[in-house]
Image (cartoon, rainbow, N blue to C red):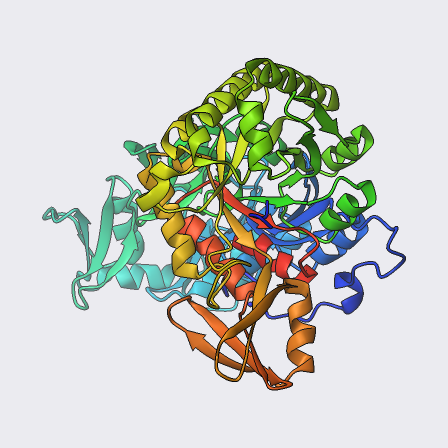
Length: 640
């Protein structure tokens, strides 16, 4: 309320050009509902919001691992998350994700030791891990690995003195070595030694490689070493090791045997030479903060479960977060109006807005009568559109009226009963209290009134928020607002961190310097107000000051943020950075006068949101809706 009055990281998004037809909002008549209803994400990062499902889906299709959510419910209505993932041993790449098994297999066949995982199952859906290895004498190569004996033999026949090892048993299963050559090899000098670890026996020396391998097969974890070259030319090691969680279970020479065994255990993993090549973990892991609380094979199951918890996230086995409901900045906005069409136009111009506050209620007189301009249909429309509605109640900004009202207990009871009952009838979840221009002498009476109102509201399940001036700790004790006591009573406190220099100021200055706004948050925290109750107000306007030739102040006026670009384009303005306010000072000359204001734009709005994030408060609130431009809200959406 007015006082007085590459999109993500380069690892995720490609630099692409999206057709304007996808991005364009409707430019039809103003009566068309432009309220955004769908939000597009890549993984868990917000990309854009759209009024129509068709636009949202069309935009999302330009990105991998994207999905569309209905804003009000966070229901997933579209997704292109992959069903299948290709791995080469323990390595996978972003481009190795596919919707169908056939697509995944086509890619996987380009690589050796490749596998395809069905992300809605466990283990492998397909693999080409070699079952047979071709050798010519001691020589082999990667291209001589085969999944079938038939393929291995077909290649082996192209070469002389070839043999094939079955990698499941490590046995010698085929060769085309002439018998005469075998006999000649056996008659030669000893060349091959069998080892088990570092141990070898006197009778473990052989002239024939085939004989050495046959002996090695009798011993587990054995190898054959060429005594001349010192090279290991055969291995019978159990290279596939099965673990459950971090506990070792068993080891195997055969990948197929290892998988069969691992399937007997939950949370099992197969390692090969230290690389994790297989597991039967569920693909979707649900965390609350850093704690694993659930595992699911399908994303809908994971989403259904995760939504039951606060600060929850869904992560893949590659530690990529797909969804979360971590605390994000709440974004509130005041309408300054009760008009249905005005309110709809305001929110339809936004993205990222969470709470809308129409000016529905007012203290009518000192007898406690309630002026009610609320509209139940507008409230329903806002709620269907995904907004939380906290109607604003004000006191006409009359000190005299409020003093009389606060002195009358019966008037307060009447007012509170009417306000709470009407709010319940409207179906709103809360009320925003904006009582301004109070006398300092009413400090205790106002606190008592807010206490009574909050108790009555809480009894009906309503939230109470209160708008308070930024003020100053130095003279807070003299004001009408006991921040410390009020903070313990209400659910939210909105800092009206603007009008640092106001209409009645005797010198020019910013409406809300960035350091001054940050100081306001610090001071509210210093009162002991919980961070999750504090909302930082953001001005969507500036104050333009008029100075004469001597530099004396002549007057001032309010300029809305949406009107600033046209003003600057029409005047010969200069911009100078002002460290005191953390803003650009804009100045121009006209008719012998100097006009100056401190710029409010997308950069200052995001700077104020940075303050909210820095101090980990609940959110921000804009005074007011209708003063803004659509591009501003895109920055708000991505910053929140």
